[in-house]
Length: 81
Length: 405
Image (cartoon, rainbow over all chains, first blue to last red; front, side, top):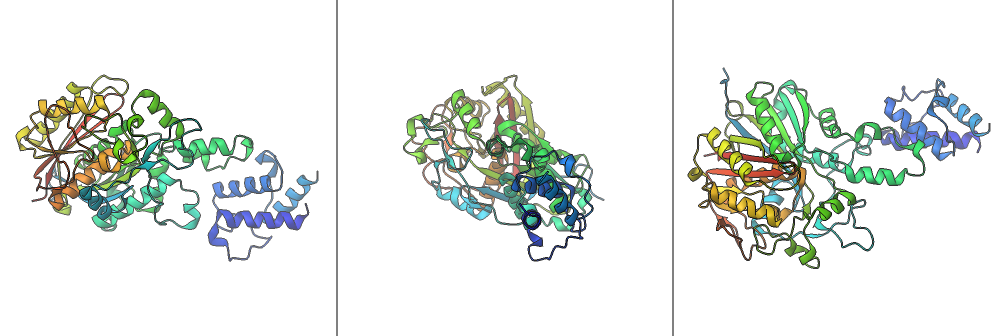
């Protein structure tokens, strides 16, 4: 699974959880907090993404990214570890 | 200056049941004695293969009142609660009341068991992906949380569990919160009891659920006070009542002039006449009224043989044989947590309409004789009405309501 696919999954999950963002461009430099997502929404998006890309990891292993691009990088690395 | 012990009046009503959303659907359907009974179909609530289907009534989906972002996270019962509270809120004009002076009492417990069963089913093989919101939304406080995060309720939210008397107890607690000065306006919600297959199987095993005799005729299965009753029939429902101080809000639909709740010492479903009579006597005493002053009784009347028999004895022994009696469950089924609240709504709407709805399927009334409304709606301008609500666990309640003159 390439990084572009993982990025598309992340964006899709964000728009699933917050339908109001459907038409808003989402940049890799933005964070979920900057998009106005609360902590429960952030967790749901990450869990949904993990499941969608077939990664069964403890949430603590995906803490750390400062923005969505870094999250995509991390998930891509985990997926191919 | 507001008086120290204000009259408490009902000024807003919101309802949902198998007759539809809104007061007009409820009163019209009740007075017409509409038959909306069928077989329960909702996922997580259907009878397993090889087991007799569950009869009952299910409601339409609620109107969409939340943002898409919130709506996708709100369960069925929470969205229905939003719909009925919105209706009652608007009618009562609560936008004009200071949020800190508005309270909310949610009547009912174990309100999401059907959705819990679906969650257990859906995540059985992938436990690490249970949605985070499941960690708080399984609590009954979810209803109060959703409502207060959407509407300007900042006095307090509170849940009360009293089985099938929960709606009535919510009304009592709401009135108490106003009387004590804690708030000026309080919403009493009889929450939707979103029963699961397991809940229904348990109640069937208990012998409480009707149907064996009328399994192929759902419309005839719910027959409170009738010789051929054989158990209650579930009906999805939910109701919100706004209670306010009369000195701030006027006469509204009527005033809650007496209310009592007693423990009768039973653990399970067994009705207890002594407890029921005590609740009625206490509520009337609080109202400063005698049994002869009551001219209409909206009975608990679930259609279970023992329950109906004990309540009929209670009403006769309490000196209420002269009063008109009807059973709202014969039209909308038994809403469990919601029953007491939606039946108070039915009572108030009938008072305003000057007509009482018939008890459906009451072909052969059991003894002792009561003044049942049978066949068609009865013109009657009720002045003082009694509402009985009883719950598993030995809970007996009685509310006395004086109509707005």
